[in-house]
Length: 193
Image (tube, helix red, strand yellow):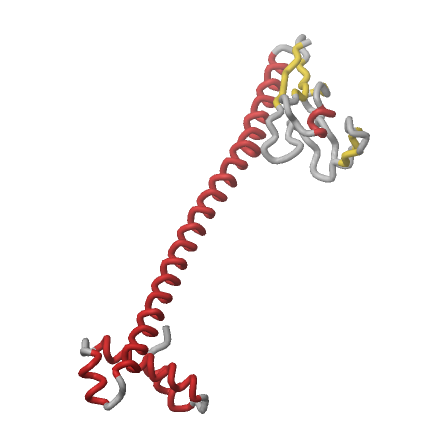
């Protein structure tokens, strides 16, 4: 809402008669509200019609209603932004847990398996990519791939043929664990030979 001084300044500087009337209505309604004056008394003191004052009050009340509505809308939008921000943060942390947390756990399992092979050299342990049901095409293509503990499941630059006939190129780092993408639910299965 414009300040009274801005309304008064605009009233004195505009040459548009309709705009002057609207600004005068706002000024009159402001003074009515500020000094809690009766419309009839105000109109009598200034020598203007009570209809003019009534019109001013209606416009001012309408303007105040719009201002309150906009304020409520701002608060609602901010509240929704806060909720969206919380939801996105939760999704982000959940992705970290499902991706990086899972990878850390699987790397620890691989290190444990390596340690076991050093303790008992008669045993050979290999790792197998185990896809979960409903997985993506890349994970489905990798399902059952078995490699030595020191080898990645997929090398950087490696091309994988998908069941759809398309080709997937691993443009990222070598995959020591079954993590083809964020939130990958595939797992490692250890094979003892």
